Length: 271
Ligand SMILES: C[S@@+](CC[C@H](N)C(=O)[O-])C[C@H]1O[C@@H](n2cnc3c(N)ncnc32)[C@H](O)[C@@H]1O
Image (cartoon, protein in one colour):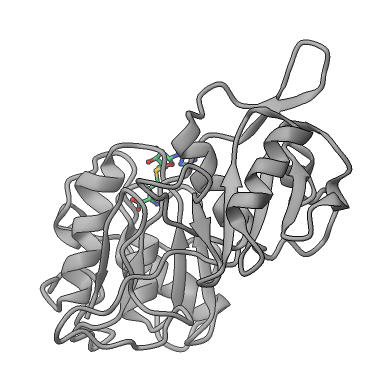
C-alpha cells in the first residue's frame, strides 16, 4: 500500500502473467521481472554491476539491462542458448515488450559478450603434482596459454613455432615437449636476431638465459604463476579477452568498458 513501509513479504508484485516475461517458457524457476526490478532498485544504482551465477531464464540480466545496470550471468544449462541469449537479444533489439519494459521505459540498446568456460587447464596427478588437463589438445593448450601470457592466438600454417604474437616481431610457442639444448638452439637460430620468442614447454635442458632472443618458461609453472589464491581481489588478469570489430550500424555504448564482440565459440550481440 502506498505510504506503508515495505515488509519482507512482497505479495504486491505477484505476476499473473509470469509465463510471458521475456518470451521464454521456464516453469518452476522463473522469477517475475517486477521482483528483480524492486531488488535492483533497492540495492543498485545505474551503471552498477549485477551478478547472477544461477541465471536460469535470464531474468536478472534482462531486468538489469532494462534498468541501465551492467550484468554478468553464469549458467551451466543448455537453456543458456535456448532462453538467455535469445531473451537478451530481444531486450537489446527493443523487441521485448514484456515484464518491466514499460515501467523502465526501455526502448532497446547495449550489448553483451558471451564466453564459454573451458575446463580447468591444470589438474593434479595421482602424486598431487600439477599437470596439464588431459582434456586439452595441443590447439586448446596453445590458445589458453596465449591468452594467459597476453598473446594473440594466431597459429601459423607454415612456421611450427609461431602459435601467436604480441607484436609483429614477438611470438609465442607452446609445446608439451621436453626441449634439449640442440632444439632450443635451432629455434633461436630460426627466430634470428630481429625477432623474439616466448617458449612454453613442460621441461628444458639448458640454461634459459643462453639464447638472447628466447624466453623459456615451464608449464605448468608459468600457468600457476597466473593463478592466485587467498586474495581479496580476484580481478581478472587475462589481458586479451577477444573483441570483435563492431558490425555495420553497431554502436559501442561503453557499457562493459569495451565493445560488443565475438566470443570464443559463442554469441555476441550489440546495438
Ligand atoms: C531456479 S534457476 C534460476 C531462475 C532465474 N532466477 C530466472 O528467473 O529464470 C537456477 C539455475 O541455476 C543453474 N545452475 C545450477 N547450478 C549451477 C552452477 N554450478 N553454475 C551455473 N549455473 C548453475 C541451473 O541450471 C538453473 O538454470
